[in-house]
Figure 1 (tube, rainbow, N blue to C red):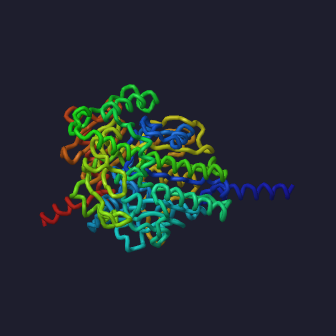
Figure 2 (cartoon, rainbow, N blue to C red):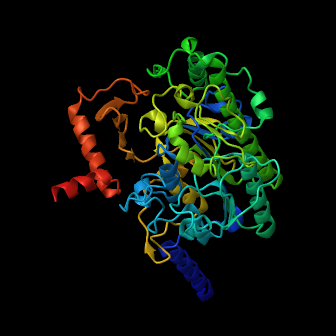
Figure 3 (cartoon, rainbow, N blue to C red):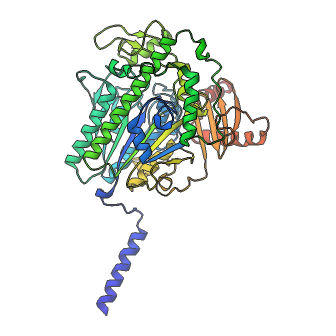
Length: 553
């Protein structure tokens, strides 16, 4: 009897200790999911065929139909702020990257690189035994000569890619492997090389650490400008855009409604007033060619994602790999002009091709895009198509600037494959989501630095059990463009208009009917909420408040 009593007391002690311990119990390493985070660059909300686009993306479609598609997921309006928020779980300004990586104003929210007050996903996963790998665009460091915020220094075991933003797809400037400049493979095309190195790192990991999980960050530069693609890929899309943007926008919209992505109350936003009707377009052949190259870039990215997924399947780890795919901002309406020359030449290594030929920089109708010796963008006209059904574009905080497709694929974690998720969520949610899936705690300190609290909420209950995201407000700011969403209300400040506008997204999801004059109390309340958040989140002080303070002194 005494032996039995001692045994019971021992069991109770073990159970109580497990409950009292502040360290969460995690699954054995073999049960922890691998995590594959894939980011497209400057891709519009409806470009993927599984989101209504006419560009075939069969591999992403397969992930979507076997997983979940989110219809109200938001990014940070532009590449640097989005990637900073994605990688840290903070608002961009809290990480130090409220602007771009070249913006080194000295103000806390605009340091031009991620700070020591944040951790990356890679750094947060390392204590759980995760191998951490990255291929592609980093864009989170201000000075490429200082290593403190390079990928290897911020938690990644291996890195292949570029520290800066977009550039030449055939010969990107300062291509690196780990902390060293590296050589270019024969017939180099960046999108393919990103996939090659992702597969290489995963296979090496599975060989060396078969029982350990991995985190792989795949940061494509496709389909960001310049419009660069091999001729064989471009040829696949000859004639695909002959109907023009007006007809194709309507067709996308109808497909989205049939798919159930858009509910019945959705309408198609009006064509941007700065865009001519397709029938009035003078340079039709050149316009069609721009979109054909863009489609080739996106199609090639999808092909490479298919190769990565195939490698996971062959190595029998696909079922327990959490895959997340999204875009860093809405479709890009930027027009490349000679005014861009100094900026662009820096990105392309001096404005010359790998063979030393001059690059024709600017959106010139007499130069057809695609080859390495061109540097063009799709521009405003096609960006309006890419963001169907919404208004506005990259940089703005209207839906067209911040809405992104989010695909979640995880056979072992998703019980409702093919479901469409309409719950609003945004970038700060991905860090806590990944850590929750991996059974890891978000740190309060790291390498002697106090770490700011994570700003998002885990989406795991939503992903696994169709639970509800917490009732909370969501906030944005970039270059003076501002927004706050509270339930169905969204208050937006668009810099060109220089005023706040109020929209009810349930009744007007494409933001065409400003209700600010009808609901001034709501405007005031939300504006106060946004201002309080801005001071708390290092949006302020910015250059405007700093200059105002200096003038008053």
